[in-house]
Structure formats: structure tokens, C-alpha cells
Image 1 (cartoon, each protein chain N blue to C red):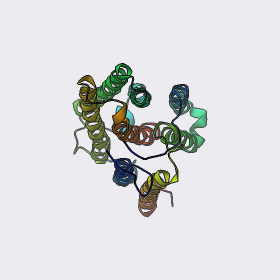
Image 2: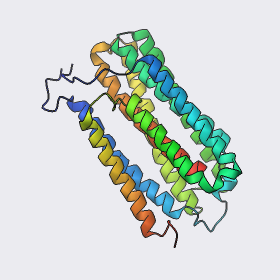
Image 3: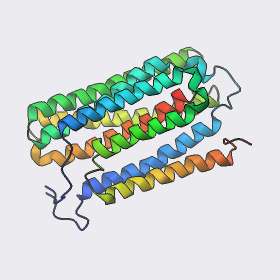
Image 4: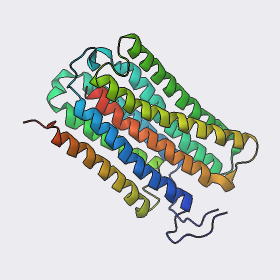
Length: 98
Length: 189
């Protein structure tokens, strides 16, 4: 047994609610993909919904919301480095225009 | 049994989160490679000719729901409900297998349509990125299988809830990686 004194984990009802939101967001992403009128703003819309799904899983299913700042910092650092790698290399290879 | 730690966080859990942090960087490099070569494909077939959005949406939904099964398994083992633990662990592994089956079908379809690994920039980056993710899912399914066997044999109960939680962290990480890949590969094609 551990001595870890994390906050209490979410209830089953909250887990199910998060799963329903995740499913709804996924359906919405696919709907947006097929609506031609939204093509000019497709990228920001999809990235926002992707980030929302990512955050929901990390906060509630991975318990970062209740497990304290140390674990959040470790994960955030990894995500930050990964994002910097992706954005930096895309910029170097001219993927942002010009 | 693990004693108190200086951080207040169990060592195994801290180790898993550190591992997950390093995995972010691994997938970051693979995603960067895919994004750099995206749209620079000069040799057919092209992604929009092959990617089956409705099919992948279904497998994505299956993987998302497997994360729900995983947290329900953790909640069950924490209250020492071993019958429910077996059910939810089994369903999580089953959903993982369904996802892998979908990925196998997709890969087979691509190869059948003339897109083996080394055909063009898209095939190389796509297969390496999604294949690496698939290998992680396969590893997770095996891990879940061992937990299920231990539960069936009476060797896993509420005292081992942390073991299930750590496996769950890995499983949810695999899920969040797919959330990113689904958007970047399939919807921003």
C-alpha cells in the first residue's frame, strides 16, 4: 500500500459523463469535417476540440485534476517539449507558409 | 508494500508518469515527421484516396470507450468488487483488440490498394506513426490480460488497486495519443 494522499477520484457518474462528452466531441469533429462551409476555419475548430478531448481524458480519466500539481507538471513538461518539437520542425521545414 | 515517499506520490506511479512524459517526446518526433511530409507526396496513392473516415471514427469511438471501461475497472477494484473488476478489465482488453483488428484491416486494405510501407512519403510516415501507436495498444492489451488473469486467480484485489491505476495511466495515455492522431491524420488530411 502506498502513502499517497491524492484527492478522491471522480464518481462513476462523472466518468460516464466525461465519456459521453468525448463521444459527442468526436461526432462533432467528424460532422465539422464534412461541412464544406466550415473549411476556412476547419483547422482551428478541430484543434480546439482535439485539445478539449485531450484535457478531459488527462484531467478525469488520468486523475490529474485530483492527483496534485507534481504529476501535472511532469506530464505538461513532456507535452510542452513534444509540442515544441512539432511546431519547431514544422516552422523549419516551411509548413506555416511563405 | 511501499513505504512513505518524500514526494507523497508512490514511486511506481511517479515512474509511470515520468515514462509517459518521455513517451510524449517519442510521439512528438513521429508526429513532427508526419506533419513535415504531409502534402508533399508526389507518388500515388494519396491519403484522401484511401483514408476511410467513417470506419476510423468507429474504431476511435471504441478506443475512447475502452478508457471508460478502464476507469470503471479501477473504481471496481478500489471497492474490492472483483466480479466487476474482471468484467471491466476484460471489456477494456476486448475493446483494445477490436481497435487493433480495425488497424490490421486498415493496413491490409492500404497494402492491397498499392500502398506498402516504402511506397511514398505518406505510407512511410503513416505506417511508422500509427504502427508505433498500435504497438503501444498491443502492449497495453497484454498488460490488461495479465491483470485479468491475476484477478481471476485471486491474486489481485483492493490492496493492488495502485497496480490497476498504473496500467490505467498507460492505457489512457495511448488513448490521448490517438485523440491527436485521429485529428491530425484523418481529419486534417
